[in-house]
Amino acid sequence: MDLSRNLHVLPPTNALRTRLAVLRSTFTTSSAFREAALQIGRMLAERALEEHPAVVLGVSTPVENTFELAFPERSAALVPILRAGNALVEPFCELLPNPSVWHVGMSRDHETKRPRVYSNAIPKEVPPTKTCYVLDPMLATGGSAEEAVRLLAEGGASKVVFVGIVGAPEGVRRLHGTYPDVPVYLAALDRCLNDDAYILPGLGDFGDRYYNSL
Image (cartoon, rainbow, N blue to C red):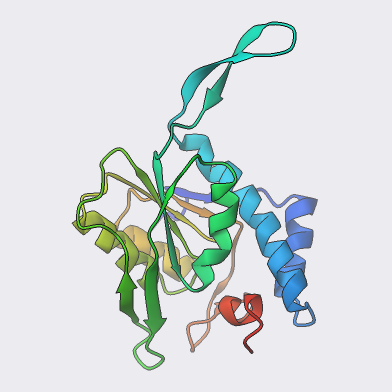
């Protein structure tokens, strides 16, 4: 499968790579990890929202009237996959006016490597006007992302986007094998998964490091 279709990886600028280095390092403290995740989240949100519907807005400056763009109110839904996905909510809320936030709780069966849904706040009927952003910092096997997109599709979602920090080719292939039209935005596409389905080189367990629960 051609990974280039509907896959968008941020350009490896110095600003991005230095933040990724902080996330990857074993010696990074939890507070520094959270700050680097927030900074990368802002880069991802700006990139992913380039395709978000916008309207022309009249603006009065101190010297004259002009026109700029604005995102419509309530035009988006954020779907963070608990618990790590919460790390990407704030950057999107900084840019989107009044998005809905629908948490989906999943845990991974360490034997089967498949996700188990234990909480789902996605409404049974998803407004077709909303663009739904599935947020999960790690796209590893792709199972959790695939399940979240499935739940949204069952609700009638018409536009779904996945946003993560680090992904593996295996996860991209799995998600696009089922949902080829879902755009995927990543800060980095890493090499592969190991036998325990962790991303290499990766950064370890994102949730444990973000919440200092190691």
